[in-house]
Image 1: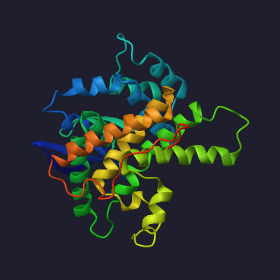
Image 2 (image 1 turned 90 degrees about the vertical axis):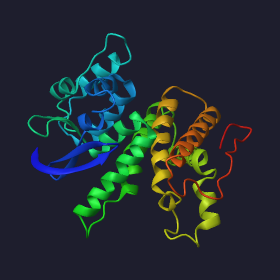
Image 3 (image 1 turned 90 degrees about the horizontal axis):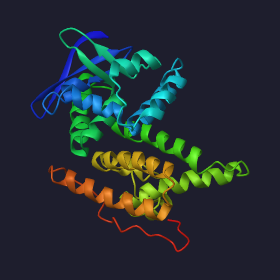
Length: 288
């Protein structure tokens, strides 16, 4: 890791940011220094959903990622005897998304994609503060090139959801490409319905000509809404893998969206939800 002194503060904790080959890595150790320390990181690594997220990230970014070793860890995750440290994960799988650093600014560092997911595991409120402070850091650092939080928030967890769809909902080899595309769009709209109370098409029909982006519901969302949306996509991928029926998933996601939005609203954030947010609908045949 290159030496640097980039840092920001959340809840009286100074969080260092290191640079690796032009990518930002945030110190997880600093993030939990005042709320349990390294034991919190070790607990997070033991979680099966964590390992699945890390596996997807590495598959997207690391051509040398050791998939068999990853599968071994994933199969053990969730059992009482399973223990995994960041160093064991790195050494066994050749992971690059998590790094160990010694010295003055030492600790466990993670690529910002992974660090934000860890922040979400700590709490949605913590993730929101982390994103906002990191954005302020990047705005100061890159005055002419602003970091796009929308691009980040709609990327990794969406890929996690599509992987779950491929494994659990598209196992029928007889499905055509068009039929598969409908499944992906429908599942994206499950999350849209849970958070915004409408599908992407409904939003375009109502707002397409008036919106700044013209076509995309999520491009009009606030950082608070996108924070919750990212969390919902991660949850939906887990529910899909568990074979929970779509109507039940929709209601579970809607309840979680409401809970998280209220939590963020309690922080004093503005424009938490669209004024035209409505309750989700479930058709008689189980479709949204």
